[in-house]
Length: 355
Image 1 (cartoon, helix red, strand yellow):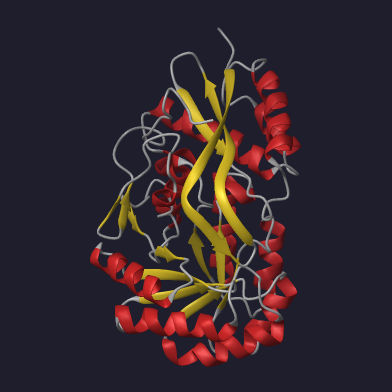
Image 2: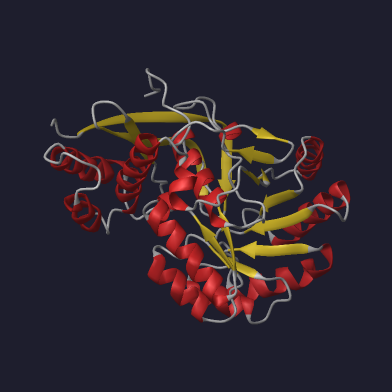
């Protein structure tokens, strides 16, 4: 029997326009694809760290994946326990672990002839609702983008805040609510930009605008919990929770109501499902999102969302922000993203990747 083989491919994807958040400005996404093959089927994973967000860089992730690739070639079968040990060794390199765990899960699903979501949960949904994201700074652009999102069938919109002053943020959320009416869910995401007192006051002033929750109002689990204990608008933890233990800590505060689950940032689909299970145990909500990933990363997040049993809108509709992609990204139709019936992720990367 021939052993498994691994292939690492770098890529660089420009954005259509600069993405401005409370953590800075993003103009492109650089990362790596990992393919693991048994000679017949190939499973794919993606590692796309984001500068200013991720604990690892693209270079350090590439080094981790190079080591993994050499070790994978010594293994004959994706069920070999030595692969579990390799995943354990990548605990401090979550994006590299996500690529490896994702590639192995995709390979397993393709060998079984089922979707990756079905490997995670036999009762996985065939499609999930997704939110639109608006990061424009000008109120008139917020109005236009919100109107377009509703016209395309989205029933949930997330507004990026924290880049401008609070008064401007409130004005933009007011414009968004006036544009979409009372029947569309509005979420906001400050990406940790506000001080605790600023966040409490901002959310107090937005309380009548029907904001469903605020992601990362301040930076750090303790700060987010402090905001949550004084806010009528629920708060969510996202990038402040670096791993499953952090998510448990956040839920244990009793004042964080929503957990944002990014399979790439946490280390793969298996750890993402563990985080979702934790949220359920604490009676909290969970939403699965991507990190403006390439098509493979978005597809992994989609399959986790479909397996999660969560009917809230997920943050997966980010592929339209990219000028180029590494493969055919999952499509959004009428505010929904569907799995399809193909085995595994259901997509493969383009033969020639942007670099």
